[in-house]
Amino acid sequence: MITGEYKNSLDDKGRLLIPSKLRTDLEGERLVLTRGVETCLWLFPLEQWKSLAEQLTQSTSLFQKRARILKRRIIAPAQEVEIDKAGRITIPPTLREYADLNKETIILGLENYMEIWNESSYQEDLESNEEEFMAAAEELGKILSL
Image 1: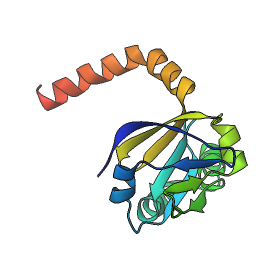
Image 2: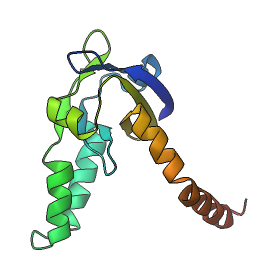
Image 3: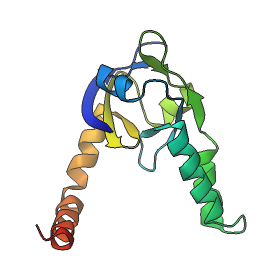
């Protein structure tokens, strides 16, 4: 299971060190990197990515404008990346630009995929979504009887 919150730095060549715990969880996996819905990147193990792309394709029509937009924003920019011998992935310039990745980053393990954020953008997102988080937590508490 891919979990955790890790601060890390992007080097001048656009390489990002994947924390050792996550590398262990991903050992032998091929990975796909793409745009996230917010201004972050999503990093999926290949099988998870295939499942997501297939579900998106099968549940939508070419004639639905929103479906085309989603595919352009999520499927089109997707690129397979690999963890090098030093434990890094190289983030292509177009994806770095989309997520405003410069130096300081946050990597989030979200069970079956990861998000890669610009550190300050992530903090802003946390703060701006506090109310939404509290409402979602309350709703979940009712469902789970907690």
